[in-house]
Length: 70
Image (cartoon, rainbow, N blue to C red; front, side, top):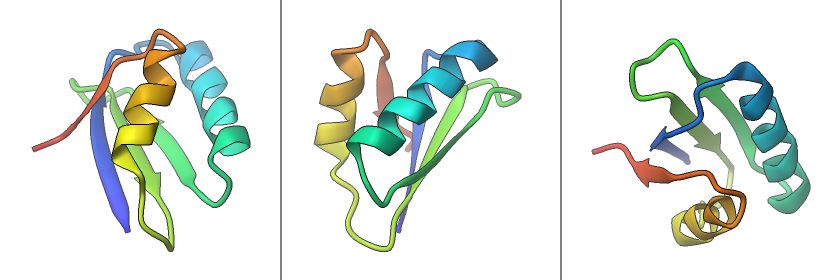
């Protein structure tokens, strides 16, 4: 399963911090950012269901805003 989000992350330093946090908190998720995209895409991949609400809430607690790409 793959979920794609628009994010407000705009630096590679912040993106690396967020990736590390997500890997620690959401075991089994593979995550990466595409900061070359105008929407600063966050891509989340997992063999299991991805809990979108938990991701959004978790990152909001870390001052990162994401929303699903429609």
